[in-house]
Length: 441
Image (cartoon, one colour):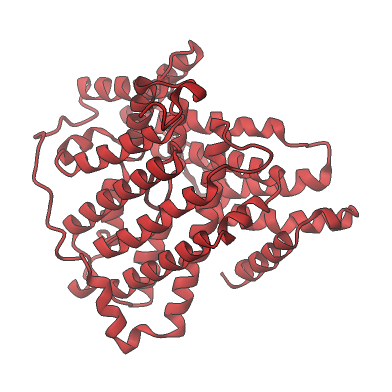
């Protein structure tokens, strides 16, 4: 096992990999609650039952698809990168495809299935890997930093430290609120552990924050530890009914499939490169075994759609595991096992509140923004697309939008500077596609 995952070459151990995998799981365990709530449109009242998915089935589908993605990533690509149904894409699935368009959720699952199959074909032919390798290193670094800012912003927002403000869009939250104070305590204790150089400081910070929260009654004690997993039958295989429905074959559904393809490709590619760069895997602007890494989310997306959930993608929260010491796919396997165990320990997940996870997200954001130091800010033609890529992610709440803006400006500034020949044809095509995307979005 140690030889297969190259523990000695990468300077890691079973302890560090298990800790890293566990830390990643805790950082993204919220998806086990958020995804079912989103796909079932829990906050929408008076919704016809035919348009509402079964909560328990989606919960199981979320855990199982995440586990499959983690296993394939860990065993095949050997990267400490975890996967699960993606935030943003699940909202598009629920609020646009089902609620706005009025499409049955079976049709939405079928669209996810088709996008997954198409991605798998692109990956097996090597085209998807070539597209990622064609992206210049300066933009990859900017994507990593932008995702860091985005993740940190989510952490501050989830903690209530940053809130909406009608005059300035955002502002400082109520620092007298007990849950906000718990999150601030978590940030302080995690920073102290990290400054002291404690391996797994992010994980231990989450544990200490959760324990303190329970002691002061800010985090509810779980009512029980074990429970049987809900039935998967309400959603399992339901997507195939869409293929026999003539109403599925519309231009509207084609646009849905293309949206799943478009957003997933760049969200996944950006996250993959950001986490890989943080872990030191990127060599000469190339990611070894990138094709195998990309196969993971394709397979997980296909499997997830069959079980009953939206598109599965790589999670930037994997950075918390990398920060805790994970360097191999063994950590991803650990995360996958924990997702399966979560099916039986779902009551315990109640202690992983936003106040507990927020400090981890903020610290991860700090670590990821370090890639800014490698960007050549003295060259304005590079600084402009890099900055816009980075800043637009947290401002728009979309990794894909940040990438789109940066990819449009990169060939523009390079052409004006007289460096047009240094821009690959693929980047020009990306710029055109993104321009059309932003105009029509």
